Length: 300
Image 1: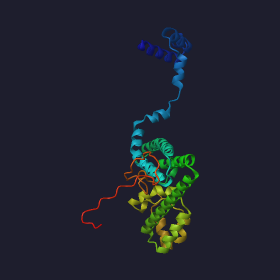
Image 2: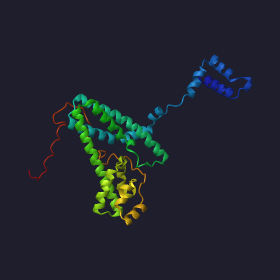
Image 3: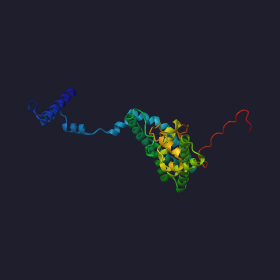
Image 4: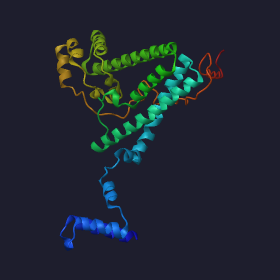
């Protein structure tokens, strides 16, 4: 029966393409298939015309799922670390912890899938070399997770708890910016031989003209100053002498090679973070760490 249906459908396609075939028309072919085989041709053609569900196909793509599994441990570690810190600062109730963990996990799953799809396309376009070190932070999965976590804090914690969390978040952001700016100045110094006054002036200028994507380029500097991002002229040229200006104009910089995700820089990508587990609130937050055993020969 299956073979007869395939043959009939093939006959219909041929007759529809060439209406004068054996004196029949496309309508004749449709009528034969309906009456003889009981196939709803209109429904069959409608299904054929439906566009493929690209999202469903991508969700089932083994390469995308493999990338998600590759990226997840580092970003999950950052989420766990953030939740541990939040609990230590704000002492949320058990129910509040559940809401925060649920929001963070959902955002992480969604962000990793989007990121994996994007990285797979970049790999395919660039011969398996991941590029674009100067990408915006919006393409970093952690950005979406942080936004979702901030929203969950606002929705589920008290104003007093939220204030503590946001103050700590601002201090961390300030620290990362200063650490990134210092690293950029150090890389510039290797190329331009800056003096102390120039280093401090450029450091202040970078903070004044800050761009979030600079954090994503710092990891590349482990391989040399060649991988400096594009820095605004107004942050550099007013503080360089003529010789340094010449060196800077001739030096390679602003390359767009991306050495993988930057989750390890000033984050938790390489640390073994205990999974965040919901627990009853305690006045001191998480349980205190066990004291390190005294080594033989050490004085008390």
